[in-house]
Each structure stands twice: as C-alpha cells, then as structure tokens.
Amino acid sequence: MPKPWSPLSPAARKARLLAGLDEVGRGPLAGPVVAAAVVLPADFPIDELADSKSLRPARRRLLSDLIRNHCAVGVASLPAPAIDRLNIRAASLEAMRRAILALPVVPDFALVDGRDIPPGLPCPAEAVVKGDATVAAIAAASLVAKVARDAIMVKAAGEFPGYGFEKHMGYGSRAHLAALPEKGLTPLHRLSFAPCRAIARNSLQF
Image 1 (tube, rainbow, N blue to C red):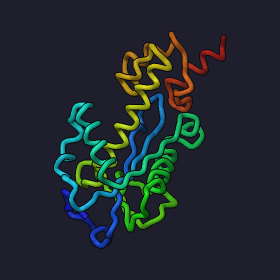
Image 2: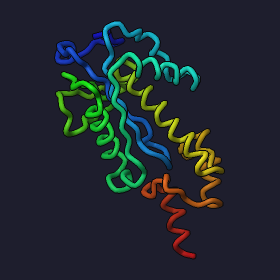
Image 3: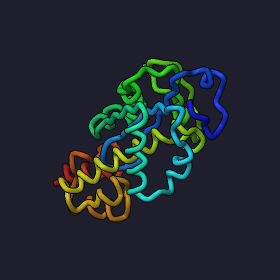
C-alpha cells in the first residue's frame, strides 16, 4: 500500500487492499452523479495526484489513464431520473456503493470522501472530510470520477447542442441558466433542482 499524504487510522493502516472512494456531480443541474473507487498499488507515484484539482483537462485525462492502467478501478453512475427519485445525497451514496462493487477485487477497507459512509459496502469504511485533498487513494478516485463524468457531458453536448454542456459540465452557469427558458429541458436535467423545476412548472402552464 502506498504511503498516503496524511496519516491513516489504525484500521486503514492494517488493510492490505485499501480503496479510496469519491463522487463528482452533486451540484450540477444536468447529468449523472459519477463515483469511482480506486485501490492504489504500492508502487504508484502518488505525488502525481497532489495537485490534480488545478490540472488542465488533458493532464487529468492522462492521469486517469495512468490510474486505470495500473490500479484496481470501479466506476458507477446514476442518471438524473434516479437523482430525482432518490435525492442527490442518496444517489451519491448509491453511486459510491456501486463503484466499490464494480472493483475487480474486494477491498479490506475503504476511505470515503466526505462525512457519510454509503450503506451496503462489502468492507468496513470510514469517512474522511476533505479526503480528496489529504488521502491519495481518494484523490485518485476523485480524478477518475471527474474525467469519466466530463466525458459523459462532452458527449451530451453533441446530443443536445446549445446548452454548453462541454463547457460547464451541467453546472448552473450563467450560459446554462440562460439557455433553459429558450431551449427547455433535456432528459439529462434534474427536475428536483429548483431552476429545472421552475422551467418544468412554467411549461405546464401553457
């Protein structure tokens, strides 16, 4: 197991296979929530992950490929209808549960970014607030999840042009909010989120 940036708990230190778990896409108005689980091998160059938040997209993609080629990785997502049905918190936790189940190995322990531990994990786990900035395996999971979600939204931009999905990735940017009244909602939009709910309500009045 590679040395993390910050000290691990005794339970995590004992794990032979330690998984980092994170999700991206809680805040956007459109698109799925995507989660990833990553088990880093002992020889992985974790310093490459330290500044992943500030990297250009092309560099993030290269790092994501490196992680996928050298680590055990599981990725899962839940689309907008599931987010509307479950609520975003529950959907995020379910995406993380599915991501760890998608790993090709069963980890001994998982470190989860944030304050919540997804129910139904196949191993013990603990939550780490701001873990994507302090625990290498969580940072790797965060990077893989972001690259995967960005790819989904870039593809969505070709299917639904005019919203700017390839630029804001579904977040409520000024351009995205301006496009909603003009172009309406797509199947990617989260109807339980206020701006989309307002558009849906207005469309029913005509």
